[in-house]
Amino acid sequence: MPAKKTPRYLRRESRAVCTCCGSSLASGTIKRTLGLSYSSWGNERSITLDDLHTGRFRWACDRCLKEGLALPANPVKQLYCDHEPYLAYCDWKHACRSCKRSFIFTAAEQKHWYETLGFWVQSVPVRCPDCRKQLRRRKALNTELGELLKLKDPDASSLFRISAIYRVMGNEAKAKRYERLAKKIAT
Image 1 (cartoon, rainbow, N blue to C red):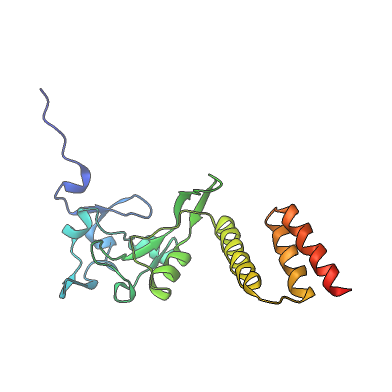
Image 2 (cartoon, rainbow, N blue to C red):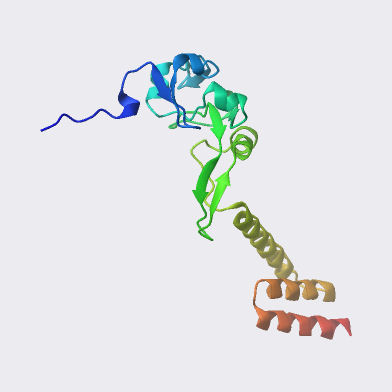
């Protein structure tokens, strides 16, 4: 029986595989990543070649960073606990949960999510940008509709707006009902 082959990321070599371009690299070509520091459970740690071998970190080689294929990350600005911080961001392909089309979670978008908005590093988008916009729009309309329906004595313009929202949501029967009420009040 042949011996089992050790997976590449577990082999102790002087090379690591870039998570951006997939190239196997010597430590001399990852100078911008090696030595970066981050806090782990209150202890300051520096990135070593052994860390990159484990596959726990998303990082990029110097060439990817220089050519703009990846953006350098700042672990200090990221929220992480049971997941390692990102050392670099590169475009990442996903499939949308709603429309099933593939979309790219860009490096710039990742940097914005994790360093500006403060999302946890293990969170990833499940919908494409178009479906996310559509969902936000539906939620905003639903909130507006709820506020308008709470009015004790709505005026004609509020009833016309309720009618318009129901029409956008595809509920033509309710749209007509509120439109009739609005016309009755307006006259």
